[in-house]
Length: 517
Image (cartoon, rainbow, N blue to C red; front, side, top):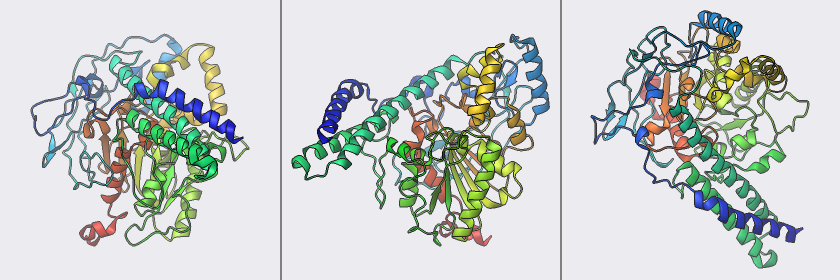
């Protein structure tokens, strides 16, 4: 058996060196011209970004970012479905302009009002940004910053309808290639790490163990390179953190929490009195989604919990989780929150989620479930699926006669959560019909423009005085990661830790005056 594993390692190593390493991206690559970010050294420069600054487009007559005008939205959807074929819009869309930069020392944070609807100029909103500017490593801390209010949208030429913009597709392709590299690196890492664990350092003179360890470390470094992250990124602490890759061995035991989570030896403290519940994304398990994040948070001193939810099968060990009806998943979340509060004695929890787990699930729980907002101090969404996705225009194919309804029917059976997260779904009305965000809950949305799943990326933004929307490309110029890679990126977790430190309820010792007030 061991010689078979040796053969597997040799084959994987040769394949890796031949295929993966020549295509590895470098962390110091320069950002493309269209993704440049302003800096203090060049305050007069303004990024030209048609896809980001234009008002939300319409897809087959549907607003890509539904907000409060849902009855009108529903009428448009119904009318266009009856007509079957999309009709070009004669209305003039509105384009937004950038507000003045908010500078803190030699750093610049930029905001855009990307949430206006095409029929009505967006109302100016004030976003309380307690999360500071760019970092390159998780252990570097920067002071909090107040961001300036957004400006109303300005009119511009009409946006094209019926298909994604080329800029969006280019960014999605970039994110997809980055994510594909991370997945490939994770596969090699998983095999190599398994072999290293199977062979001890004394077996066969330690050769298999040494080779497998080198291969695993190489794969992890390559994964970080595909993210554009520092190759030597590491996290000191009790739990090992391997940035840039996921441990796919967790799929063999979906009910097993990742290292750092559900650990009885860790308790809430006066320094960190609120427990954190991690919510995995659609189709993912707790162990796979949080194989990096749970250990990072535990090493930082937080009490961390994970659990699986939304299982549409009768098998609790199904490798596909978080696919069920989101309303029912919210009931499971409520049960988990009550259990955690009782176990820890805390008054509230912090929810950190990826995709569905950072977007529409906690939004439904807070906006629609009685008492939900009272139990949550903060929501941190990583690539959150807040206002749904057009999935790079493919959602429009659901309106194709015969085929479209058949796909919808099958999807509702096997993955109802997927349909609920599409642009224009009735469930969007239910969740966001009255408000995006509860003013008594803090929100931080961590977003990559290269997201290839929740598209366009502006769908991930929320409106509200308690909301901070962070675009990773503005904090880390040249950022390339897509929807999947973000949760293994050390820079993302540095932003998460900043958001937690900015919350007086999560870190009361850092905010003594605010708590007294």
